[in-house]
Image 1 (cartoon, rainbow, N blue to C red):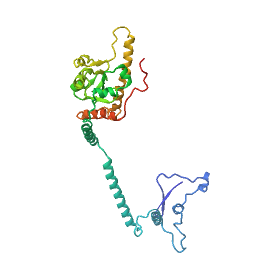
Image 2: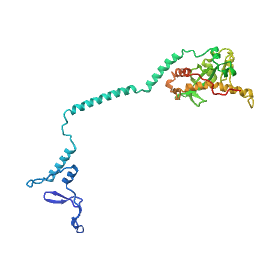
Image 3: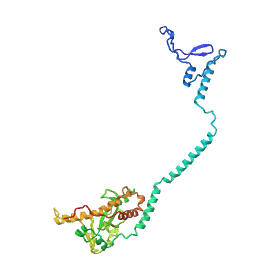
Image 4: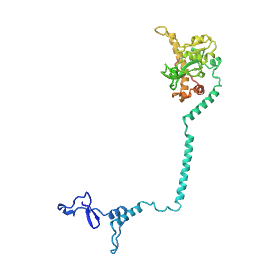
Length: 338
């Protein structure tokens, strides 16, 4: 429809207006007209914003009417200019103070609960050193008579002279940036960088010897020689180990013997060698169980960072000794050798 603007008494078309009254639409008589601004505002606000005026009072002009509509809308939808109720500001100030106190309390609690990596490291190192001094004073190496008194029947039957069962194990460590250190800690057996240690247990299952951790490239023979185990063995003692421990001559110089599965010298094991291999394998399972107990401590389930290299021996010794407080290891459930 055509839109007109009133400027004085002259009616002018707005820009973009087009004709809307034609003969075929009866000159626009049937076209619905848009409600006036007063009517639309009255419907939206729910009350009559332009009540009936006395006959002698003239209707307001369009600008004045629109100002009344705008003022009515502002007063209806917003109350920014209205004064608050008595006591409302005091209540709001008290609520704000209460919330600020809660924020301070929660912030203090959060700061106490938040533990950084350096804090955890200091706590772990402190406790590791303390437990190392405490547990390190315990005499875990037992005498030959104590070994015989606590020896299970299966050992009495197949290896009565065994004093200690040994095995090596490795834990992953962080790869150092130095190429020289990388070659030192790289283990060809694990195909990664590791620390390597030696554990010895009595036939009763108690951990009786724990070596320091060495670099992963060290051999089983060299580790046994440098661990200090040979200084504890006596003539007549038997040391049960795996085939990788080529320490027979070292033990022979002490008058001790090496108990390992026999090597296959022919195409097939003899019956005696087969039975001996089975017996040693079933008895050596104890040291593997002991090592599994040590590695169940979660610190060994992840790569050891190089920042703990100065404390790793204390941690390792503490974990090994603490397995003695978990109850005895036994051979229950394993079929004896016939």
